[in-house]
Image 1: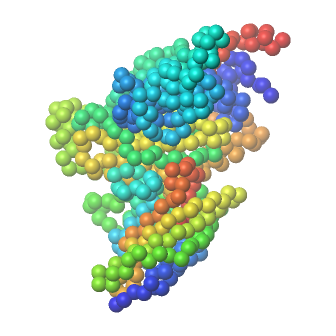
Image 2: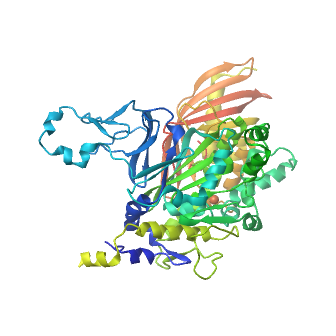
Length: 450
Length: 159
Ligand SMILES: [Fe+2]
């Protein structure tokens, strides 16, 4: 059944303060998201330290599109569709590898340079006088529309035409800058394997939860509240070194006022972050020697400015979140309307002490692993919501907290109370924008249907 | 004091039985004060600390995990999960009575269930045991999951 054919149909799913449940549960809308939203936006692919040498590649997906990120012979990182132009065979199956100077399809040995250009076909005379050279397939593996490597983080836009990288991200790139600047060398390197956590819910629920500051003290009472309780039972000194669980998990139990005061900033095109003034990452213990290294690299004033910024979660619309102070990136990979693979990656601050990467790894496993007692309650909430949305009792999801009551301006940066749901509204504003950007206008659709 | 092969094998059987029966207070008493539970994320992972593990948990964290299971507002445990270990006869890799150190490796099938979902993990558990006041204690338990590189949903109890 086709329900959503026109721009009007899509626009009607999002009101200033509510969202229709179909955006989370409809198969048809999921397919439209893959076709439009994930093609028109800049989507995270990987980090260039995953492919340090020429010929190194990494396979992943952008929306539902299988792609290969590869280091070309000119040292640039290319992003190609992972599909042989001959019969469609995926060129690479392993998640990482080195292909040398060219890719070779395992089916019929067509080969391609690492920028995708066709190199050779065995028995090529079989294509003489067939008009083969006029096909798009004869050119080789197709590259995505556009690629940008921003300080090591590789993004791609599938669509050939569309918004530029700087226009799309604008001021939000300051969160990436802060994360990378925390390395005295100004460089990050990927560490180990990512956590891979399967969620039976829509990908947008995860993205919304990144700036949902009214859930930690409720949903995570069982972990954060119990941590505080055990700490008190043990009678450990409050000013002494804390057990890791107290440093990492207990801040989730902070009161509403803490989250109200920490602030939320939004940027155009659906990006935003929690923790403008302070955050749950503000009170981590100092690592000996690190500040001195930063002062040496940047001078005292700049070092203090970099380390004084303790942004909590920065959402890069559509589907990643980074934590600058702990060098973590989470990728919410959509697999279906009710299926999302969450990959949680961590990075090393090049030239910084090892204790920092130890804390980063600790955060990753304590909060975002399939074995995490914090993650368990988050997933429980998402899956209950996914099931609950099947209810016909109500059709709309509410995102009205601290809604100003008239038309909100999402085209300018704004800082507001840390418990506002403005960032969720900002995401849906962008969702509509990039869903309909490449849809034919209503009259054309309706005419064609007649 | 000497420890026999049977003592070590019985220790592992008793330990997984405590987990299956939810006798967590007994289970917590099996550990040394600085004992660590390690579940690597990567196949043949060598470093638990400087890259992501699924678990690298001290006694505070394990106690928190166990206490949380009992909580009234532990939403992901309403209803509760259950688990079930099927273990092969453990390999006794090291008996060093002089140092009071022992190593046992056990292949297991671990099953966990909640509501309509049930999953199976094939795991290898390595116990590093020490003698303390005449009793065997766990200094480290390392649990390697055969498909550690697969995406999992919630794993809520302990293999
Ligand atoms: Fe949460």
